[in-house]
Length: 242
Image (tube, rainbow, N blue to C red; front, side, top):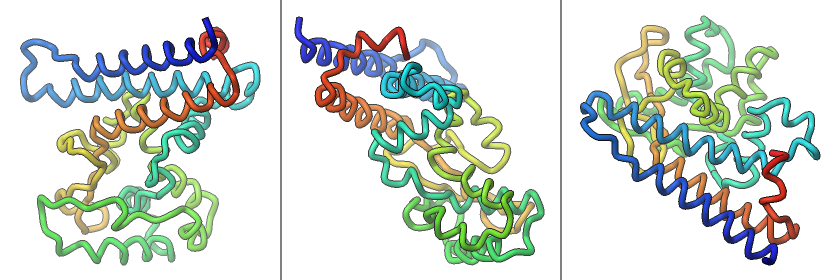
């Protein structure tokens, strides 16, 4: 068999596995538990993406990177998933984190507040597109005055928030004003909630739908197929080193 044949076989098998995940339909699941099924499916798709990351950045060639799983995963998504909003900072999430830590007397907090005030009259039950509110980190670093503020900025990047699904940490994120599982439409959006007790504005909660996970996986697999072909790599020979 040729390398091209093995590449096609490997990628097709991967695609079939993720397709099977999406068609999982557990019997007799109460409506109140449906979000847990969605979360479980997302976690499985995340594992598939992480496996691809391990094949791209093998332990043999990327020893230090493989000691930092989050860094490896984020780099892979950034290079292979073609997620245009991935590099952006979640303004609602960052604003919530700063308010909860009482970091309000600074230029960064004021900038975030002004950016969200524009949408304060949108009302309850509406959605807000990521591209309408979020911003690149480089524009926020100019306002940050401490290393801690810069760390909060990076932790609020969509790549970083998305990674939390790998270990099903959404409860932690939700409690800190992060993601939610209620709305599962085609694209990631923010959904308006109650007024936050920490800053008095609408608390916009972020939703990454299952379709978004599938899209990132499909694009990553497509680009990995190209990578294998261009580098003439048989993916089956990498399995033991990933």
